[in-house]
Image (cartoon, rainbow, N blue to C red):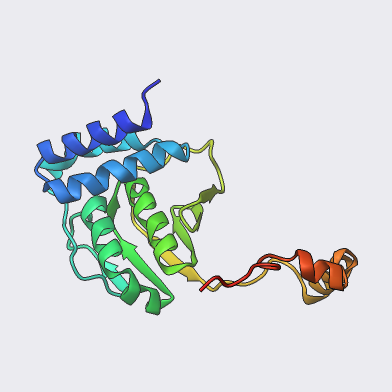
Length: 203
């Protein structure tokens, strides 16, 4: 089994070999490592993407708007991912954004996962009936791991979810009330044993 370090290094070098700068290649290496770490076919999709890259001449995107449509060509998922990382603070204000025409959309997934950590919000990533919930770059939930992921996506929607508790106020109050049974009333002996107690100032 290949180590994650090998996966990252080889992906980075391959990305430089197909024409990306070392800076972008490094981002690709991190992203493919993340895909494989979360159990997604990163190496497989990156390899297929690079095999098709020259003949397909995918479209690069620099400025991301709320609605984005490629000009007959499919968007490159890597330049899109890098642009997303660079502009995430502005894009977050859209609450959601959409794209039409992206090649190998799974390669965009790790970039969005890292964006989730940067803005401190969960991100919902949807395309062709596939749904991914990105949790602060800690985990990724997927609605169907058995499904073969498509090489292209015509309609993609990305939503930024507001943070909220997964429990009711009543559940919290009941649990907090139960926790109060562990509270210990402060006594003179506890005060003397507390951190810093009994220290003298030698200055």
